[in-house]
Image 1 (cartoon, helix red, strand yellow):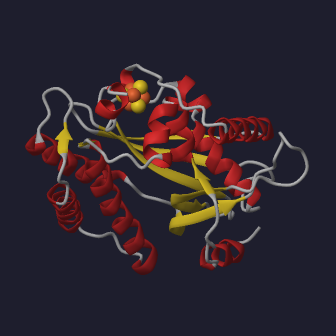
Image 2 (spheres, rainbow, N blue to C red):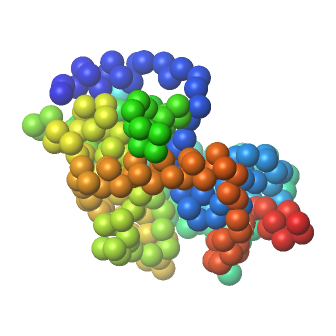
Length: 279
Ligand code: SF4
C-alpha cells in the first residue's frame, strides 16, 4: 500500500458509533470494577495521579516536535519544546480541582524538573525517519467470533502518536512512553498496545508486511539519569487472532456487567478508591 492510502485514511472522518479503545481494554483487564466506575457509571474522580497531567504535557511537546518536523522539516528549539511542556503541565494542574496524588518522594517541583530533563533528552536524541502522520486516528472493525459471522457492533479505535516510513515505504507505528524502568523482553513480547496497533494497521492494509506492522516504543526513562530508549516489536497473525478473542470475551463480560474488584498495586493511585471500598 502507498502513502496516499494513509493520507486518504487520515482525512476520513470517524463517524459516531460504539467504540472500544486500548485504554478501555487495558482498564478492564487491570480491574473490571475500575472500568465500570470510569466508563459505565461515570463515577466522579476522587483524585488524579500526577502522571496524567505529566504524560499529557510530555505528549503535547513531542507532538509539536513531530508536527514542525513534518510541516517545515525543521527541528523546533529545545526552549520552545520546554515552554510547551511547562505551559501544558501548568494548565493541566491548575484546572484540576481534586487532590493530585504523587509517588513517594515526588512533588510538583521535582516532577516539573524531571519533565524538563526528559524533554531535553528527547530533543537531543529523537530523529524519526520520514514522518507520515502525527496523532493519526484509526477506527477498525473486529470479527464477532462468539456469535459467529459478521463484525462486532463496536469498533476498535485509537490514535497513533506517530506513523513513520523508511526509505522503502515500510510503515512503523511509534508510541511514546514515559517509564520508571526499562521494558523487559516479556513485556515487549506480550504488550497489548503493540498488538492493537499492529492489528489496526493490518486492517487498514497499511502494515509493514501483509499482516503485521512494526511498532516502536520510544521510551523516556524517568531514571536518576534520564534516558531515551527505543524498543521494536512486531506481531503475527496469531497475535491478532488472540487479540480478537480477548476483545470478544471482554466485551461479552462487560455486556453481562461482570465488574468485580481486582485489588492489588492498581489500587494505589486508583481515582475511585473511596467509592470502590465504601460499597
Ligand atoms: S480501588 Fe482497586 S479494586 Fe477498587 S476499583 Fe480501584 S483498582 Fe479496582
